[in-house]
Image (cartoon, rainbow, N blue to C red; front, side, top):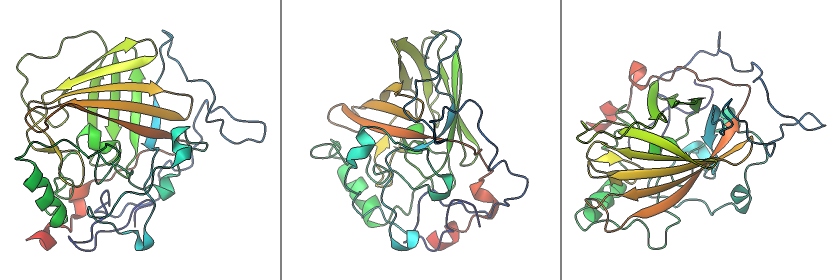
Length: 297
């Protein structure tokens, strides 16, 4: 059994982010100490220590991250897209006070419905309303994640998998533990392509506004799922992220989605990530022992 997740049992009771192949704990860097971690006098991690910075003085987003606003783990560990998100944790608004535990990782509050905190919910175009309802009612039987396809970055922020950020002055690379996925955010002032071929992660270019990295992304595939209910991005989507490392331990990402094909107006949500230390990514390749599709046929 993998160190973090439970096996899939049935298509009707799926825990998103569950690995589909057992992972050996041998020869893995599970407890190797992370270098440069600020600590308090008692030896605990100082989550509110100053934001690390690169040689050019800009914030350094490098690190291992998990959702900073986890949903409450339910009895038995199983969940459903029909279940409501846990109440918003007031403490999470001020930032997590301890590192994330990869042994207790859960999906975020926004995993099922990324617009859970928006008054009235996501502003779907009329054509999308029945599609999302159907996907929620049938327990996301067509979910690309369950079929071992890549997860879009917006969704990856809230899934129960680790993300590793590698940051250099001209490039931010996001490595997804699930299926060894990756995303590149170029910060070398290159323009976005004028006629991009649609891709899983789209095309991302970032620029600094003070200590905030502003990332513009276009060119995602039509029907790209961004939550378990089946909300989507289309090829018309323009996504702007305003990413800030608040301190050593907390990352905040304000996301604005402008997708007139799928939504009646632009919408904004805020997602949070929490640092994980003394751990590393572990191979989690869904298709190696995939057991879900046989239940979906």
